[in-house]
Amino acid sequence: MTRREYPPFVSYLIATLMSVSLLAYQATIPFKLKELGGGLDAVGFLFTWTSAWYVAAGLGLGWVSQHAGPRRTMLATLVIAGVMAVLIPFTTALWQIYLVGTFFLMAICVFWAAMEHATTGLHAHLTLIESTAAFCVAFSLGNAIGQLTSSAIVGQTVKLPFFLAAIIIGCIWGLTWLTVSPQAGFHRSTPAD
Image: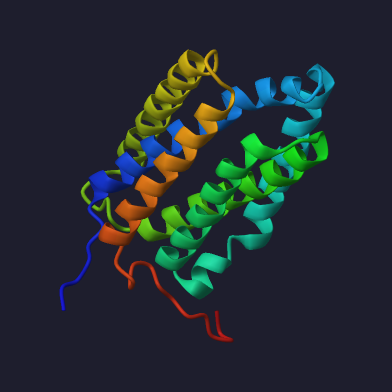
């Protein structure tokens, strides 16, 4: 049996790709809200609402990676996020966008927690500052690509950026499946933990 490894550079690639998909979603969602008759107040409420749930997911569900393992958690949350990204274009009411968007961002938050868990210790040759800087560059690059891509294609159709986000999430799922070891960061907690 071959053992899957999680090379540190793959973690930067995954961070970049996930930022592209996240920005494709975030940059396009105001246009979807407008399509359904929502105004700036609907956009503001959506980002406030989903941000609150994003934080709640981080605080309340971060432990899932410790119990299920980061690989399983990453794969499951990517499926959830991908399905939510595909569902957004088919929403017909504002409340549906709030619901689907909440699950999308909660899944992304738990994914990030599991990814951090999986990458712990992989960057032993880097200082904490160097590793953080590398992740910041990866996130920033992904944000720029996501913003540019979604801005360029949203003029054609509001649906396309969401499908693009789902396709990228599918690619991340494949990278995760291929590179993250089932044993990566896995720890079963005991009563002493």
